[in-house]
Length: 68
Image (cartoon, rainbow, N blue to C red):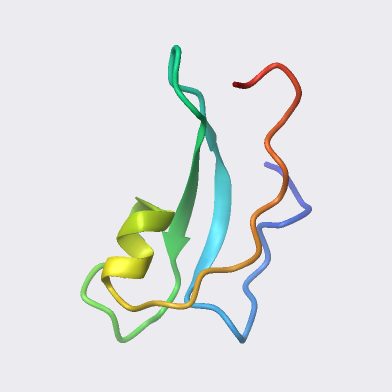
């Protein structure tokens, strides 16, 4: 399990999970919702979904080399 960005941040409602590599498209950052009072607590979602839920988005690490 990665140990860098996957720590809960009291200023965000999610934890960065990793990058989803999509062929011929830009990679998508995935997160786990950590807001305990949210109905989707524990779900893995994209940044767009976090924003639709009006949840705080943690900082996004740069995508790894080799991903488009």
